[in-house]
Length: 561
Image 1 (cartoon, rainbow, N blue to C red):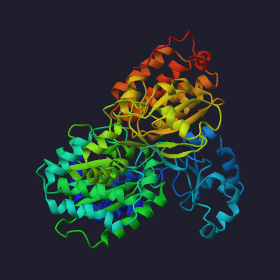
Image 2: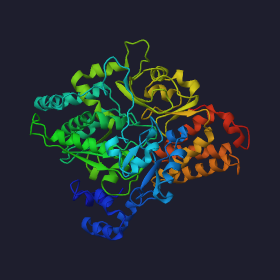
Image 3: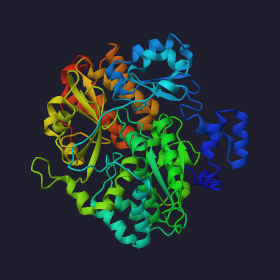
Image 4: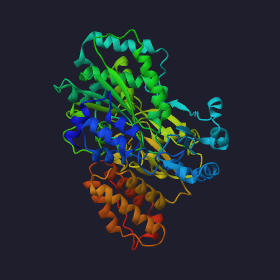
């Protein structure tokens, strides 16, 4: 992070945003030079930042079509057919790849002309290329949305926008900010992006800062393969997200709410913008508190899901992880106090304030003997991919048995050996351990796994686990911001080691591999390099028979804690 660049970018701020202008420049040296002069930043800085994004100057920039290469589509083995069909109509040099498009419920995902498709759509490729999809809705996708609670929280219907925001008007009229903040703290809501930090405590930290200029940022860069719960909320419950951001702004004293939405979600961008327009047209909000929403569209960088890299991205800097402390609530966007939460976290706020903190906290279901008693409260959205009989979005109480969620989804659509839960950095759970887990942060940690964002990818019995681990290292190596050596070099060495072993070029050495994993886990600046060792260790513990032929000696099985 460069404080000088943050301050220079802040001069024009969000209205004429450096990052958005960099995207428009499309890597053109002349336009970048003009931008550098306008913003008084170095040309090298702008060139460096633009090359960090896949869709600006990366290898996938300016392609006619994109093929999803995410973990779910990999395990579904759907992409060879999609790629073959695309290459029959489009030159292979004009086909890029993307991870992922959030169409994991039906796989076979691809994008053409900025529109996402999946499932059976590839069979209608000629119609898509002739732009007939505008009348046939070939791009639309549907999936089950089921709530396993007595009453929905995040999946609750919003029938009337004006009535929905009346609660906001009432809160502002009460002028009791401390009581509102305490309600959020007492609810026990923890960040749903994966880290699980207490939301109310984070908001209180920002509110206590004396700066006049503050920001609210929604991390909608949902890049974990297998995850589409944030996409669901943005496209079906956008006002729940906006409401939560507005409340955060009111409590902290911020005037701007930024939604950083990944470029791979074009439908989400359009729907959120429509919701912002509807919000601005409301007549029942008091004019005393001025708050503006702004969408900033990503440009293809998984690392922007990490909070500090996301903030640097908005500033127009190269998206790299910053050392903490100071935390964003003290020194965030443009060096000002910032509240940054993910989509699902903001979406829970309306229900909490409408029904009380006790009602929300009760959803760890202490009164329900069938559910595990846990300090995690409220509900969680789970996204199930195409390896389940009824893939889609499931809202469950914290403490719900994982086996009951799978049963509600009709079980598996094919024989599976494992579930990858929580994205590429989440736990690799063998099917034999499913009955031991409940949906909460504590249960997964106790069993040596990670709940994370709670996306679930099924790994079929036909998928070799060592090849899947190579895929995870390859993903990490490609998406590393490069700031710290343990991640940048470690992921590359891991990819090379497993590639050589899988292709019978060189055997794996357990001590060397363990040293690599320890270095990445303890030395990486963020959860990308620090997180990928977990599924690797899970795989070695639970699937030693698949790895043994790849090692130069007998594997010593070690339990993950």
